[in-house]
Image 1 (cartoon, rainbow, N blue to C red):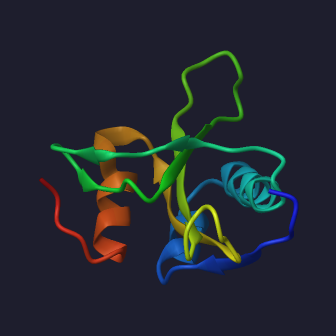
Image 2: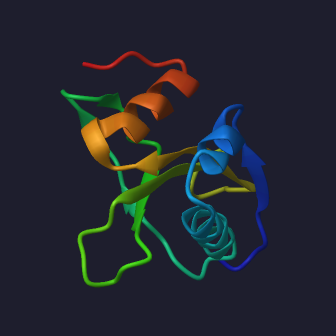
Length: 114
């Protein structure tokens, strides 16, 4: 994606970031800018029986320690869609534990899990 996208944060996303330790919060915001600018890209999510339909969203794993399994996730999507995107929408962010970031994303998108 070569054009600069507008960055939109769903209500609650800022609280997600502020709840993280400072170093992790800064990493999350930096990664979000890298995604918006097309420098990195996460993996597409799907319609999963455990969490629900997030097939229009992506996930990006990150952690300040490169030697461990990433503990943090960002969930985002392109609006109106990936092909004609004019904005990057930050949906949820937080720890990997218990699928919480995905469940939060479903709630913010007003979707119910499987």
